[in-house]
Length: 588
Image (cartoon, rainbow, N blue to C red):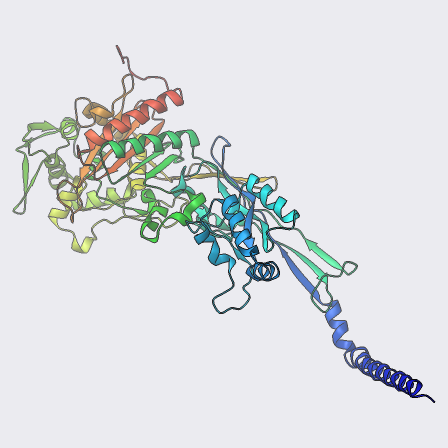
């Protein structure tokens, strides 16, 4: 046998032995899996693997059916640094080319995008990552940007970049009613602040589940048994809020704050007969579509100062003091006393806000002049402590209104154990007592509603899968008699004429209104809360409104700052709702 033939025969034998050894090893593994592990594999193959299917979040509408918030599908721009780095290794310069193209398409600086496209600092392959812009906001591509990125991907470029469709909460009118609505955390379905938080459980819906037989790797078997529980989309909310009114109020409020160089301000408008909130606006505010752009130092912008904030209301409280004394028949509108311009409260002289001495003065004139001395005289000589604080409680001060919004503040009335005569005197004209703007507007709503205090509410219905739950007026209690309510209304109408609330008047309409100016105890005298609370038309009130401006620079009093804004909004509302005049007028 030749040497070549012998060498070939040895190769054949070696190759045959290798095949035999491989087959023996394979048979051994088959025996192991088919016989020894048969039970385990069967159990794994038949195990039920639940797959969660997310539900759509419910939408939010205003009272007219205008869409305020909904979920839309948007393309998040995502990168895989490992793929990008590998592509750059295969074709040097790919990384720089990818970065340059993204900068051009997304209009985001290279310095912002570059770190997200690189491997982690430890040199380990990073998982895919979202791209963020200069404001640390997740980048969602516009339709044009999506088209350009898709075209490049189809052309074999932008390796490691792709578009990830996501359901994103979108607020149609940007910052409109932002503090009332709240927002949804990006990348999740967790409502934060406002209605998004309060009604989160009904807005999120219930995720669905696909329970299917799976293989050993957990992948569903197409021909296996399956149980399908479809997702239930979240419920839709319809609000009492009127977006047209809200937008107008926000614009007018902004103009007033700028004009008077104020720090902030709020306006709330309520239907006094139902408690339905028509508008609730505060400034400064934010855009819930871009809540990530708000710095941590400004997170207070997320809160609603009308429900979570409190303040000393000042002379708007005088109408409440008068109502209590009228209801107990302790005074009449014509009851008079002598006002020397100050009141000696246990050695402390408390003056009228303007230091004026009005002499003999009726109760109606006390409201007209906004005289602190008159309010003190009523509470110390007629009402007394027990009666006064009882009526404060009946009007809802010091307690939650139970409005359907989160984190409501209950305000603060001096506790019985620490109350002094000076507290009583100051509380009678709205100092040293803390209320929320919502509490104050609802107290005036009771005056406008025949003495009945209503519970405020924002959501009028919750709709889901063809079923709807309606929410309507809820009376809390009768605070004062209808006769007392009519009497105080007449007093407010008369006192506003040629009084502190004169600038809130609208020709042709009877306006029942009272001004308020107060200074926080820890602030200088020129730091004021300037406000006007009132309702109209007085003969048949259609709305009650509180305007509150915080720290206006010039002027600083309620009549001069909040009065004109109250007038402008009221005049617009009369026209918008086509409310007919209730008194004759010769002009205007």
